[in-house]
Amino acid sequence: MARVMGVRQRFVKAAMNAPFLGREEEHDLAVRWKAVGDQDALHRLASAHIRLVIAIAARFKHYNLPMADLIQEGHVGLLEAAARFDPEREVRFSTYATWWIRAAIQDYVLRNWSIVRGGTSSAQKALFFNLRRMRARLAQRGEDISTSQLYQNIAETIGVSVNDVAMMDARLSGHDMSLNAPMSDPDSAASSERQDFLVWDGPAPDEQAGEEIDRVRRAKWLRAALAVLSEREMRILRERRLVDNASTLEALGSRLGISKERVRQIETRAIEKLRQALDAQQPDARTAMI
Image (cartoon, rainbow, N blue to C red):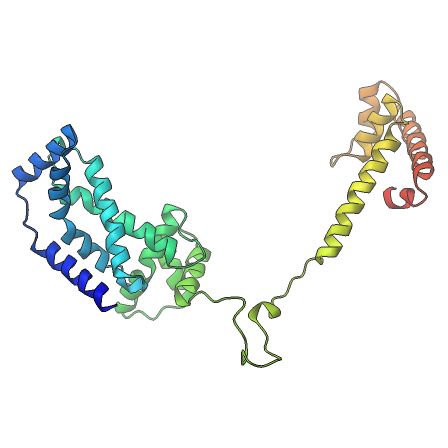
């Protein structure tokens, strides 16, 4: 551990002692790297900006992630900035690289702060990194506002829903907890885990499996029974019984060119034929289907 700390301290010291680059020298190095892929130019350009990586990484140390990892991810962002930098835009490399360094570190924080992935959208990402700061700023004003009003103000500022603010605040207020964590003495024979107290209102797995088997069986019975119907009987039964928005007798009769009473008679006959077909297949099928 001491050896790791020593290496880290030497790295930070070397970064802080790296010479600053003037505008012309920086431009020359960027041109050499972009035009001919000069690795030495890239090394000098990146080394001169490691202190910028360290400074930005330090802003994220309160997320309780290893500082070395934050610096490493920031260095990845620095190299990405170097690969995309256009020296002819007359912008200092540090200005351009800051966004890429911060973005790389933020992505690392989002991926490792919790086992539950959050901040998948730009608004959610902004909420994650600005919620605490905004709460502190609103609290410094000395205004006595309710939690709901606080959430409303933050939601309007960032452009997310109040529910999103409440959920993110709850996540930032606690830490991940394992469902296998014991609720009492782990050495006790009667020790229970957190997952033992989770309530599931849905059907049990064996009930779900049974329902799925029954659904497939009923569908098979129905397909076989429908084969005994004529084309017109099948159309009437489908439009009257097998769709969400069933047709009226009058509307269906108008489309078929027959009276609504005739439609009713054909429908009744089709249902009776279907009952007989189901009875022939399985005695209990008719009760389950019709």
